[in-house]
Image (cartoon, rainbow, N blue to C red; front, side, top):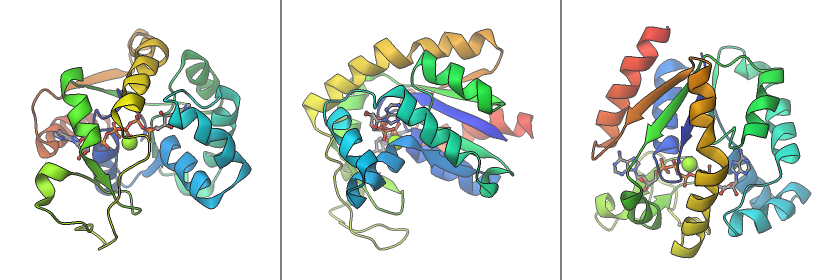
Length: 209
Ligand code: AP5
Ligand code: MG
């Protein structure tokens, strides 16, 4: 199974990616996570990516595509993978088609009015889990691994606005791009809980198996 998860910032890509990876045994590849790991490690990639991420803009296409191409050459993805947050531009989608044959693009449709609260209330763990403050009941550690929860640096109202603009201009056209290839499935999230969204996702994915 080779999947793309598409959706605005805060749509729930990461939340669903963790569940899909666990249930279907596919490798979760998040370009955002890769960049954040590089920033944390102080690498050259991290230094370059940080200025773009802080501004809510896309990290340059060529660098991002090279990273994904290298990642997809590793043996562990042979049984399947899901790309969380890649591609994010028509250029990236065209490049991806040269080195990968994707089965499906899952598009998460979410009301933009919900996004600001979702993202600004998000707390994440280094293990990949993410939570919302409203459901944590004051807890500051991860229920899965016990790690300390923290807030992402780009999860502030100003950067979220910029990320949404970037999504609308650069990424939203991919919905039509994958629909034209009959490779698009849209999950309308509305006010569904993560579990309810996952149920809808499984309905789609079970037909692929
Ligand atoms: P990235 O890390 O991919 O961030 P993003 O796309 O902005 O998306 P988020 O991770 O913020 O949201 P999500 O959809 O994963 O939502 P989540 O599940 O966490 O990218 C960051 C930056 O890196 C980019 O801005 C860019 O600069 C750079 N970058 C990355 N990829 C790139 C690429 N391909 N090209 C160029 N640059 C790139 O959920 C959000 C919150 O909502 C959480 O609190 C969660 O608990 C909650 N939640 C989730 N689902 C529900 C639900 N159903 N109901 C209620 N709450 C929910
Ligand atoms: Mg994410």
